[in-house]
Image 1 (cartoon, rainbow, N blue to C red):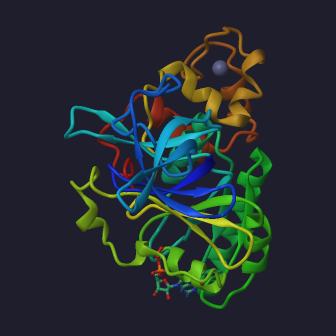
Image 2 (cartoon, rainbow, N blue to C red):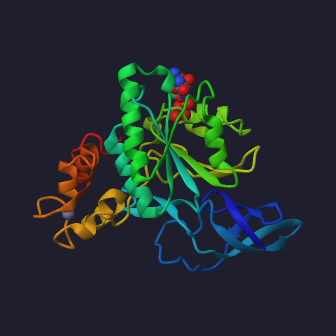
Image 3 (cartoon, rainbow, N blue to C red):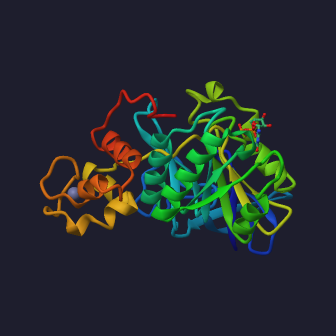
Length: 312
Ligand code: GDP
Ligand code: ZN
């Protein structure tokens, strides 16, 4: 039988068959891992093949293979000597909630998030929440950010989750898809999920970021069917995605507006830092590339570990 993994506890997997039945499954033997070394062979969102087996009067499923992943996100455990844990696979999109205040979301965080999503091939839509709470000046700033990011190619929607404003636009994008909501604690993820009338409550609200620290290996993502034709993957406490093995010279490729200029740089291995005749730096000087984006890029390439926004 074929199915999709909805939940994983590490030893048991809840799989929804293509007929819509849920089965508790175990895994058997070795898998083709598609070249990914991870602590978990099967992740939420994986398409799997499984067979039913009877043990006494109980029926369980045995997963025998996983399908190719169109994308996946990982978390890296520093404790477990940098082992990679696949949080979820086969996402159609991630909504990143952004607020200017309460809490502030810095462009360095947004850009780092976007780079990782580009690297993992996951479309991101930016949701600018709490529009009701901003001063005129802050509204101008949000408008500036929306034009900046939509010019690069990211969908941007201003919303008021609490009032339900524009959530229908979010819902429309969710139809038929598997989505995830991300953003700092307090940006309004749970409020939005409630406003969407999904029929479920997110865990994210109950788990503080403090609590999450050091527990990276014991939390699991879970997929839910919503009251309308859509699925979401809830990942308690995830602020951003881990980046695995990203080389310095590929980071620029994940800034789409830099990537578009790359062929115009004098050197084809240009890092856009201090090389002569760099098209990105020229564009920056002409205000065609945003200073905030370039700043984020430099922080990432120079591996500025002390950057206070690094994990925000
Ligand atoms: P989460 O941690 O991302 O799940 O955030 P919550 O959904 O728990 O929201 C954090 C706080 O922000 C709550 O007090 C919400 O009522 C508030 N909030 C959410 N959306 C809005 C909004 O559109 N406008 C305003 N003013 N507050 C909001
Ligand atoms: Zn360059």
